[in-house]
Length: 278
Image (cartoon, rainbow, N blue to C red; front, side, top):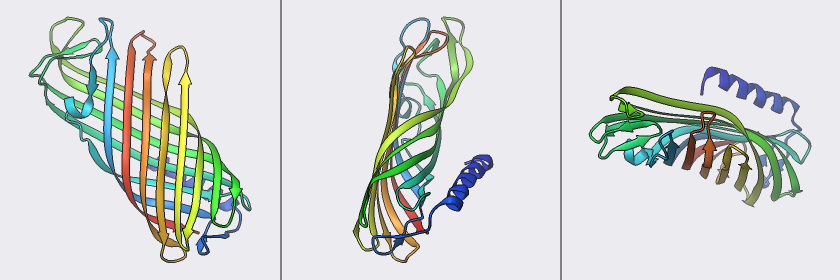
């Protein structure tokens, strides 16, 4: 995370803490004003992209297979929530960033939009993602041991991909091309959350969030879900184990130049956290 983004996230968090209500206890032990899971996650990744150029539809490319991009990556992650009223209102936040690069000698010809890479060419590729999440959450059910809530927010999503190698463009002479593309966009998400104290100091937390759009130039969506098991061995500190899944699926996207693309990207992460409560 850059210093600027870390500063922005810190200001949001500190502002929410400053205006939040006094702490109560959940699961007969855990303060519930601020909850934070902070640690590392080992992620399994799959990336499939189809890019159609002016000459027609290119082949579907799996970045992990074709370009030897790492299919597993361990990264820092943070998730948390701050209570901003006496009982039912919360602000959620989260952050994860995964950058990957790889390269290999192609085993077969590859058409990438208007670019044609011949078998035997050495091609380098990169794929970078970043998700910054923030949302307002309200408890429909708020009991001593169980809470069910709905959320509305957004994930600022940065996606960047590139291919670098010797290729021909629209049938021209082969030369070295560096084809890069990136996008940063806020994706609105609505969701459902469950916090369940199954024993003293032991809590299950789960979430499901999604967004779906079908318009003239895009058909696709974003989906996030996860479940965390947190054990607080002292009042303010514990350990947590979490399984989280992020999926971006674009069935069809038409660029301003009229090219068409399909995109599927899935992150499945198993995390180990220090879990904090105040």
